[in-house]
Length: 315
Image 1 (cartoon, helix red, strand yellow):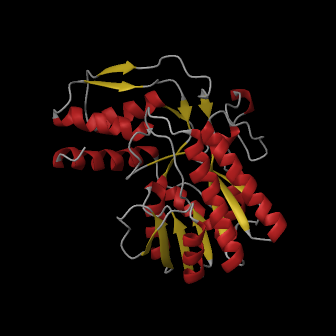
Image 2 (cartoon, rainbow, N blue to C red):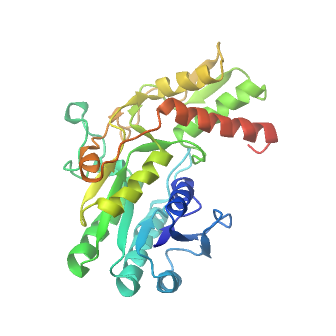
């Protein structure tokens, strides 16, 4: 089996490449990064460039395509909306068009986000796939546009395209600036004595549905193996934890006490939901997928990674 992964050097992309290789697939990857995972046929490329993407798809002739390449906001530096549209939406168009022209029978998974649902009232949660799009950020809007392109290419050209709406994911290699990585880095620094016994967090009360990235990529694989063309699937655990819960787990793993926690923004932004809890029933029923890695293990592995980075002085 030939597999093509865009964004193969990223957080989920690198784990997906490892999983696909373990299944015996021949894996090719597109990314702007130069540090491609071992065993992957590397194609350094920009997914917004149509001729480049077409050449890769024509050469690889994939049986499965996983489109993960995207800009994801992390930390406090916003991404300009036009840049989000260029990479996330135009990049998706380039990939779908290349698949249509050179690998029309390939099953394709577009990686979307639970952010397309916006701030759903807690009384209407857990969120299932019938919830309407109500994006409240430029990133969320770009993900909704990706999905509309996927729907259109399936309807007009008959491409077997599916969509994954991923809720929060965590675990080793998590992108710096995302909430659990930010907390793990600070805890590792306090533990090593390179930071005082204080850490900052935007706010503590928001509750999110966290799934280990290794379970997430297994879900992606099963969606293309057993999913129904045209459908969208929530990828989530069906359980919610507050940021305060996550922080407490990390502090317990490091055996730290007396740490001062500073909430930088104790009042939520209008675009930030108090609760984001997904319903994975469609994914479970269709594919048999179940999350297998508990949150504590995900956080332990992430903390160990940051401990190593702090110890090596590469933070």
